[in-house]
Image (cartoon, rainbow, N blue to C red):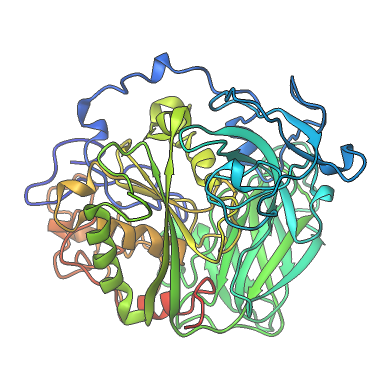
Length: 529
C-alpha cells in the first residue's frame, strides 16, 4: 500500500509519496517512513542558525549580510587593506553549525580558492567547503566575477565540525568543451495583457533561442516558476509539451517533459527522439506569480556517452561511512550495479569522491521529514543539496542520508541544472535505510534518481498519467489497476513497464530502454574519455 503502509505482496518496496505532477514526484518508491522510529535526538539539537533559512537556500536569490558577524571585521577581501584577505578567524574554538567569524589578515601558506582541500587549514583563507575546495568570502555576486556567484556554504574548520559563511562558487563546473550561452535579462510577458503584477499566479512566456541543449531559466528573486508549455516558433509551431493537456489525459500531449517547479527551472531539448530541434527558437510558458526578467543559461555541446564523475556525501547515514576515501562495501556494490545499468549508454564511472559530513549538520540532515514543513515538500532538502557547492570537477552529487519520509530517494530536478552546484536543486538524495534492505536496492535507486537528474521521467506515474513520450518505453494503463485503489503498482504492471528502472516503483531486475539510454548518453555533464 502507498505512503508508508505495508509493502504490496511480493514487492520490494512500497510506492512513493508526493504529487505525481511533472518534475515534482521525482522519486522512486519508498518504504515505510522511518520504520516507525521517532527522530531521536533532533529536538535536543541547537536551533538552526538564522544565517541560513530554508527560504534563502530554496530560492534563486540570497539575502547576504553585509556586516561582519560577532568577532569578525570583514565579509569580503575588499574590506581589507595592505594585501590582507578576509579569512577565517584563527581560533581554537569552533562553533559547530554556526556562522564563522571572518577577520582581515595575511594569506596562509595553503591552497588558493578553487583548489582542493580537506579542512580549512589546507586553504590560504582557512575556508574549505564540504565538497572539498577552498573558497573566498563574499557579500554579493559582484565580489565573485562573472563566472561565479555568492552563495551560502558550509565550511570545514576540521574533520568533525562545520561552520556557515558566504563564498564565491563557480556558476558552472562543466567539461571544457561544453559552451554556456548566457542571456542576462530575458523579458517575461504575461499571456493575458490584462494581468496585473500583484503576486497572483498566472501564465507568462519567454522566448528561447533555437537549437538544442539544456536551457536553464532562473527568474528573479523569490519568483517561483514551472514550465507548463514548450513549443517552437516555427510556422506552423510544433508543440513539445503541454501541461494542461497532460493533466487532462490528452493522447500525445507529453512530447517533451519540461522543467521542474523552483529556481532554476530547466528544459532539455531534445529529450528523446520525437521532438525535432528548431533553429527558429522556442516559446516557454510558465505558471508563475511574478513577472521578472529571466537569466537564461543554455548549455550546448555534443555527447555520445562518456565518463561520469560522482561526488557522494555521507550525511548521518549511521550504517555507512567512507574510510580514507574508500566507500563502504554496500556503496561499492551499489556503484557496480549502477555502472552496469548505464553501461549501455556508453557511460563509465570516472572519479568517485567521498565526503563525510559531520557534527550537528549531519545530525540535522540525516532524516528528511515531511513533518518539518507545511506541505508535501522536504524543507531540509534544499540546504542538503546546496552542500554540492564547490565540487572540484564536473560531476553529479549524491547525498546518502538515513531516511526520507515515505520515499527511498528524491531528485532535486528533472532535468537537473547540470554543472550548477550549490543550489537548492543541485543533486539527488537517497534515504539508505530502505534500499539497503534489499540486495540491489541501493544501486537501482541510484540509477533511478540519477536518471531523473539526467532527464528521464517515470514511464508511468502511480495514478496512470504519463509525462514522458519515449517511443520504446511501455506504459501501464489504468485498466491494470486490479484492486481499483487508484495506484498502478509493480505487480499490476508486469509486462507493461514495471521492469523499467524509471517505473515509479523500484523492482529488480530492471533495465533502461534504448531511448532512455540515448537520453543518458547525450548528457552534457559527461566528460570525454
